[in-house]
Image (cartoon, rainbow over all chains, first blue to last red; front, side, top):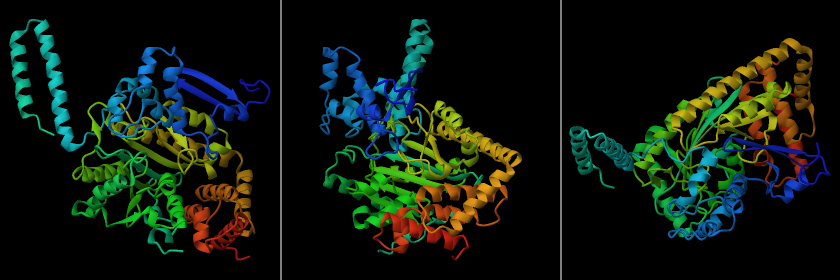
Amino acid sequence: MLCQECGVKPATLHFTKIVNGEKTEFHICESCAREKGELIPGTAGGFSIHSLLSGLLDLEGAGKEKNAAAQTVQGLRCENCGMTYSQFSKLGRFGCSSCYKYFDSTLDPLFRRVHGSTAHVGKLPKRAGAQIMCKRKIDELKQELQQSIVEEEFETAAELRDQIRKLEKEMPQE
Amino acid sequence: MSSLRFTEQALSDWMRCGGSHSEIVISSRMRIARNLEHLPFPLLASAEQSEEVLKQLAPVFQGEAASNFGSFQLLKLDELDELDKKVLVEKHLISPNLANDSRGGAVILNEDESVSIMINEEDHLRIQCLFPGLQVREAWVRATAIDDIFEGSVNYAFDDRRGYLTSCPTNVGTGLRASVMVHLPALVMTHQINRILSAVNQVGLTVRGIYGEGSEAVGNIFQISNQITLGQTENEIIENLHSVVTQIIEHERNARERLLADSALRITDRIKRSYGILSYAAVMELKESAQRLSDLRLGVDLGILEGPSISVLNELNVKTQPGFLQKMFGDEMTATERDMYRAKLLRETLGSQH
């Protein structure tokens, strides 16, 4: 099989990219792979998870027109550590935990690609966790409350309201 | 050459007992990535900030809460010589990343070397637990208990929606990388390995070489680990890995039996040749020794070879690495000298004195 990039050399690298269930196969030769910056796993200075990630992040702007929205994303900056979105997309790593807050608007598509999911469901730290669980419960009850109002079940709604008030009062502070 | 306790012997104490399925599974490892609130990740941290991280994390494991897990010793990476670092990497006690770029880097090890706590690696804190054989659940129980001890003393960077915040987006959420090191010579020999590895990829697991990302699978040893850290609970991740590895063990077992049934003479010849070459060669490159040690390992399991024991083979896998050879035979060595000493070590260990 010939390299699908240059069409001259035999393809020695074969890989499959799966993005949101969509499968794309690549067959390229080593020199084209090097030119494209996708080096072979295991070679020095080569391909790493970070270069792969940065490829994914770059896709964000490259696919679309360089419109105002894309520029806004590029202009994002973490106020805590000073990392810009464009640095983040090059390095494929966050500078500090606040980056998650400042780049939040861009993270769902990235996490969906990498993990197929955007929200944590695992272990909670015990101290902060008690508060988070309480908050989750309150959110749940608020939704039920809305539902019961829509369905005009005011007695249930009143009960839910009291439960929410009680939980809010008991909520452990940070 | 220093005389660091952790680099004197090739096998950590935990490696000496087999654990379940030890004829195929070498070890199970849990790694939990955590960061402290407010401080920048090691990528951007200043020397003072890295020092601050160390100051907050180091004392936790000298406290009473940790004494259930044995006694711990802290090693600062910049106080170790290059060779010791190399040997710690070869024993999987620290990552190549921590050895190479160790600004404020440190590792806390327990006596039997089954717990390794890295500070200022890619994340502020990486808790690693190693168990022999297939023991992913057991390793998780220990890792999460150690995590709880740290969490009792410091504030982690944690977000309601994203979970534990890590430097690399591939670790966010649980921060958990659960991995199992498996020896799969029969699947390689029968050309089934690629089919199995691509199936593994489709269920959210990934396969790497034994020294992590970017390293090659030498000697038919593969590291299988979870890819996804966000949107699954730790339990789901561990059970998924456990069930996939159990199936791979089954496939490898079947392939071994089939090899023995269909081509006993050929396989016996291959294994005995490898034994012969390892026992008599004068020069031995790492790649060849890894491959031939893999043959021996298979030979012991199939009953074709009576000695050496699996434990001796595990030991040779580590001792034949460049860092360890230099540690044993002398600091300065050319590649050819290493190949010579590797051959000497193999000859002496495997019985021939020629």
